[in-house]
Image (cartoon, rainbow, N blue to C red):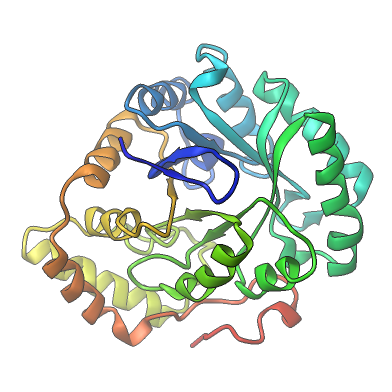
Length: 315
């Protein structure tokens, strides 16, 4: 496994990291014992960063992950979870709720501290509350030693610019913006570098668009995005290339992107993903795949309040 520095945190994170959303049966029903084995396999193979949230599976992902972590020494992994989102339409970014949330998460995860606590999907919150209550709660938890670093997460890139221009945070978690079909995260890199903010990239398969399987019914991508990704999958299959492999290699081979989260509840899938990440990529194939995805490059979908989505390219 290879490791990179996460901003100014001093943390060395594996270039491929474990997103524990699958443990909550978010994408399809999963076997808890198999999920626990997947966590153990990931750590055994050098993955040292794991991310989760109380929202994933409505507490299930944290609960199953906590069972897995009981058998792993605490110094073997870096752990992040989130606060502020607790259901599809349940958000609470108040100071007191953030404080309580981390206590509840630590109980489920069987740990007495969290390495990074992210505010979850802040584009659904009131920015005045995010800046005036939620981030101060993170700072207080950091002073108490219950978390080591502060963070924010969400889909629209504008939210990171808004917050970082007013409040420092140690890390951000961005998803679906550094993948073969959407590299708009590159626009944010100069700001993150200037602020010394750590970057966690998530969903190199664009929440299943690049997996070759039918995306889940809740996936918000427009038909043109789905269709183009499926056509590219079929092209890759015709030349004997795995599109998920190309997608993971594209994500982890940018030195400016410290770590990329992938999620699975199956040990063999985890092993395959790790093999993909560590294999020398075929940049010629990556370029051709990117060329075929050019018609939908940087097309996304709105998330949260309209004011955070004014610059989002949709179709």
